[in-house]
Length: 459
Ligand SMILES: Cc1cc2nc3c(=O)[nH]c(=O)nc-3n(C[C@H](O)[C@H](O)[C@H](O)COP(=O)(O)OP(=O)(O)OC[C@H]3O[C@@H](n4cnc5c(N)ncnc54)[C@H](O)[C@@H]3O)c2cc1C
Image 1 (tube, rainbow, N blue to C red):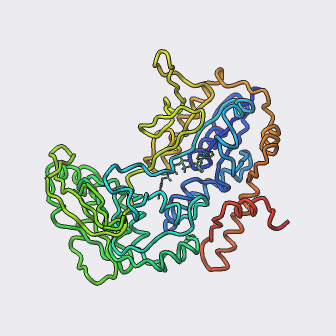
Image 2 (cartoon, protein in one colour):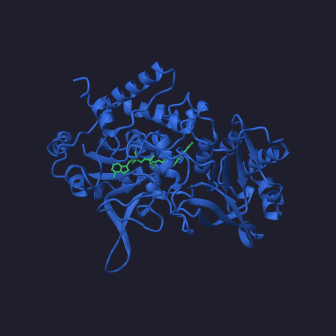
Image 3 (cartoon, helix red, strand yellow):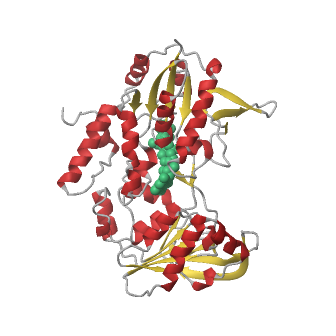
């Protein structure tokens, strides 16, 4: 029987779902899957993006772990495609590859002053508070007044973690240095800015509502933002999600404020124009233009310019995918160009796109960094369907045996981690958590993660 030796690069939800879907799909060939990730632990942004105080979402890891624990997918952590493994290596050992490498960088925000000291990308801050091994362990939390630019769930995560009292995060899996950093934060005011109105936000209702439940944090919204036009009223009447978001915000308008030691301000119809220098090369204020509905669901500038003094700024205007050596990349959208997951390459002579046989994409690197974890499942279904149908065009590897890849990694001295290693690290982190009466305490340094996974510490 034909056998598909498949490499999947990226052990986030998209990669794991793709493996699971392929193994469960109807097909007339055998399958053997190797899943590679450059991090020593699997689960991608579920481990290193989803906020630590969202245990329900972090719990998706349980479902992903069940897939890996079945034992029919091999996993190689601490292996970076492009450095430790190349496309030529994959062609030598596999019939095809699916890239599920996600998006980990911040999208740019091209306004003057964005490069000032004290201006950060949300992705860096998220990586810090989620204990990502490749980010600094210290985070400068010295600002009393902070701006967060963006109107999606990541902006809410950043604003919430900044505004929340550190003790309320203690039961979660935040690393000890993150707790210490947040506990010392002098923050009193967090200002969230969105260009559009309350009925056009990308927040989901659950995440928005949660802000109103933070202990000792007042939610501040402004009456001037609720003068809805016909398009906004139609959105409230016709879209359940917008209806709930509007209801939550309207309740906050009625609330008494002024008691809490911290405030979280939502500024709608506020288009950031410039970050102003405090005179010492640091963030000193944000200048923004008041916008107004344009009658067609968008906004236009009104020419009214305002300023709010701030001491730090976080841009949460989206994530962006990174290019991979030897693989086509669309610089404009930060994705691998593809048709329903079949990777496309542009012919230099004709300028036409054609399928790059054997190469597939799924998840955020396939369709861009939008959507929830659940969406990566439908993504994977589409990609896997094409992979199966393309059987006649798979690569014909010269060394398809399962041992040959292990030999290759070992010959290169790569300290890869495997499923047993992940279990060891997982148990180690859970035990650290139990000792401290917390969910889990993450091991952060990469070397330590690898040592524990490879059991070299106990040796
Ligand atoms: C801050 C934040 C909070 C979020 N919160 C939620 C939430 O509450 N609920 C929800 O449903 N969704 C949430 N999401 C969205 C969710 O995380 C994504 O939908 C999902 O993780 C995308 O899956 P993916 O597998 O495509 O990418 P990722 O999860 O990013 O996984 C990609 C994997 O590829 C690996 N990789 C990258 N490059 C290489 C390489 N060169 N070699 C080897 N491996 C590589 C990475 O290490 C990573 O493990 C959040 C996202 C962010 C950014």
